[in-house]
Image (cartoon, rainbow, N blue to C red; front, side):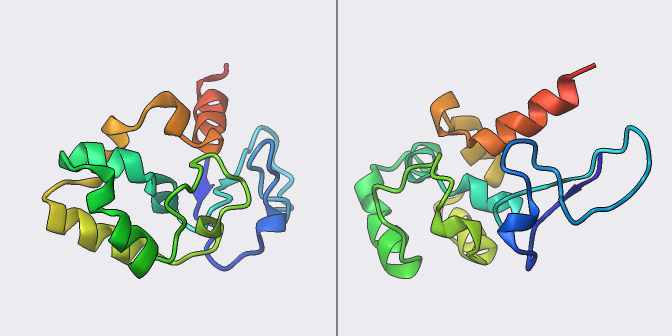
Length: 131
């Protein structure tokens, strides 16, 4: 199952239910191309509480970076399907902050609760696990 970052493509090209790239007009049977609805997979890791937990910090210590540098609302719901994270190019900001905090992207993913994991990720995993 090929998986793509959406990058510059319009979000409307991605089916919100299946993550199927609507503009992919291939005719191959059983070929399931999928595309993230957020610009890049890293945009799904922008979960303030998970980043704080992974870094061993109180979330208030990261709020200035979150709201000031990134312009994100501190109460941003990780499940929000109409999130500014859908279109932001912010991977470099996250990587720089994680380096400053001495943690990795894997640390953030490990510290996410099930409720914080975006439904797009759950959809893709369930599709990959299906027979």
